[in-house]
Image 1 (cartoon, rainbow, N blue to C red):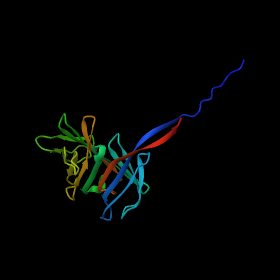
Image 2 (cartoon, rainbow, N blue to C red; image 1 turned 90 degrees about the horizontal axis):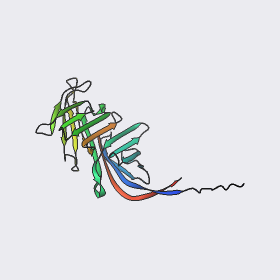
Image 3 (cartoon, rainbow, N blue to C red; image 1 turned 90 degrees about the vertical axis):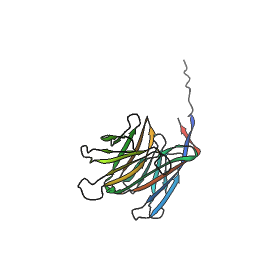
Length: 218
């Protein structure tokens, strides 16, 4: 009895990746206004060459979560929300802070339109009443502060959050920041997660480019 073996040739599948132009605008640690950028090619990230006082960094964009990320210098990083709906207008987002900005590591503000409430770091919150801001009482390790949500408050006309908290010691500048937000699952979210003490004034612009193709061998 003879047995015939059917040999299957490798299947090649062409997968389309959306490419994006990512540009970073920021105030460097030296206090200068600088920018740098790059274009992704078949992947979600790209390398932006050094520019001005800025060293080379890896920039990336996640269209599923409307977030942009930066990695550089061994362990420095940040991830922040962007607003926009793609198309020719792209996505834009900024995080700007002052006062005790060096203490920021992971900040998240959420606005729920059904309850008209703003929540800070999923712990502290308050309900808006006739204005865009409300006072959130101290909870746990978070001191009291003013939380704000603006439907079209960003520089680009999209949603924006802000937080203003006095110094927990009663002296010093306290913390003041704004971050652009995105809409997801029935609520607005603005977040900035970063290496503490390294980033205080950051903007990311993302614009879609032509589709690139990658070949996957199965």
